Figure 1: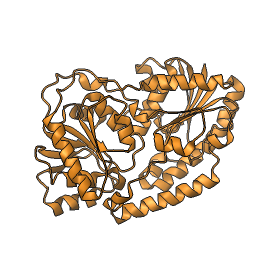
Figure 2 (figure 1 turned 90 degrees about the vertical axis):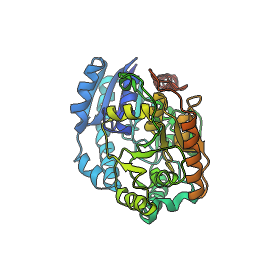
Figure 3 (figure 1 turned 180 degrees about the vertical axis):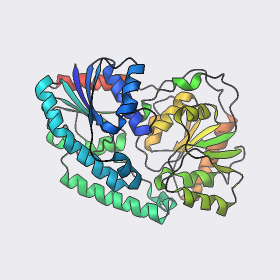
Length: 394
């Protein structure tokens, strides 16, 4: 088949969203000819990656430049969304011209896909795959105050913006007949509704082979967090959990973000300077090796959609502790075991439950793996099956 793939974010070693876009592209190009619409600023990383993985012959790159993404991403979510919106508008005539020239069997909108944001290729007359789509997960109300007043204010603004956008945007599931939807999680599947829908979390699209070059060694007693330091990622809960652990020696936080100063003050207030270490950002290849040997990967995010970090930790064989009912839980559940899901309650009760789960995970720590542990959900096959189902709608 000939596939037109729109991936606003698609590049190696740039974070979870670009990595998910890369995995969608790799899946599509494994069987089909792909024309890729993507941000022009990622061209210098993407082209060499395709060549190194033997995919250059199957992928035609169509870089689209609109303004300065890095400036927009650095300054605010509003600027990022505005850039995304402008980029989606810019690809509409490009996609239409490509369709007139080539005649695609299936079109696919991936990355930054939420069920209330615009889709630039939706005017192309061809069967469409949309997703994996997220956007419906919400933080448990009893844990809102752990985000701090700024975090709560930002979440209220986000909810108001979502409500507005859902009224003014006409996403594909409201206007298209030939549509196959891939939802990140059950919450988004419920929000979209309808038929021709499957739950396929981005977080299962992992490739951690490069982390297994070294001998396994011993699993340590360290707890690791790799979530970006923003209010809803649950690092407040992770730090408070360290007040109650018996076995864990240290919580090492491999990230940075705008919430850093607030979290440093929290560590000082709780007297946990000897138990919590802010390491900062780390290259992905190094971080994967750390997670492979860690005692516990702690991910108590309040409203993640389908975090790639959790899928990577599960594939590496690291014990994972997370919140039940979250997008992270849905990712981990695609493996048979190897994780503990803590039911969220009030903040301190949740922190104590996380601590117990950490100690239990360390007491029953599995050996360090010598090869990746696959999910029961094959992300690449799910993408390819979605293309076939969409093509059958013609």
